[in-house]
Length: 250
Image (tube, rainbow, N blue to C red; front, top):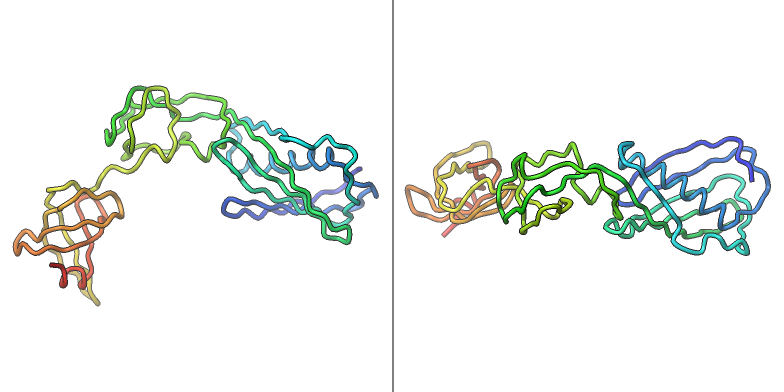
């Protein structure tokens, strides 16, 4: 099967990507499983190169069934639409679909395994829960991954302001799920409370009754009246509350 002209159009979605290969002057030949797998690998490599970047080396192999030459599909003379879904980013498993809808209607699933070589952050020492991470806490290593780098923390992502959500031993490849922001507010802190209403803003001082990370809600106690109120951490040492939350708190 010969392809003399290929035009690529990309549409990236959340977790799913699609590409239509519009073909001009295609030899009338049926598609074998091997040919579909080869083009599926090429399609997926192109898509992942855009998502992951050129600094990572990407290897893709079909998981099973792609060398069965007994399977044939009629030639698709106008367009083959390729889509892929990341089945398990932790293990690098991706499902690619080839679909023809020009009269020879068929849709073929192709299961692929992706491995990559990429620069990632690795813990340089044992890290405690909620220990502030400084430059000495991590190092950059190039490792082979049985996973997609989107599930990992790769340079140049900034680790400033993050802390482990669980204890980590030295040499662990860091993932977003391993870290969380440092609290903006600590229990017992004196914080500024902004009370927003219709066309006005009031400010007061309150004592935090709990820790709060960016965007988290917490309860406070007004430093002057002793009344409790609730708000949301919107900046280090700053809580925003509504008039309702401020006026009706116990």
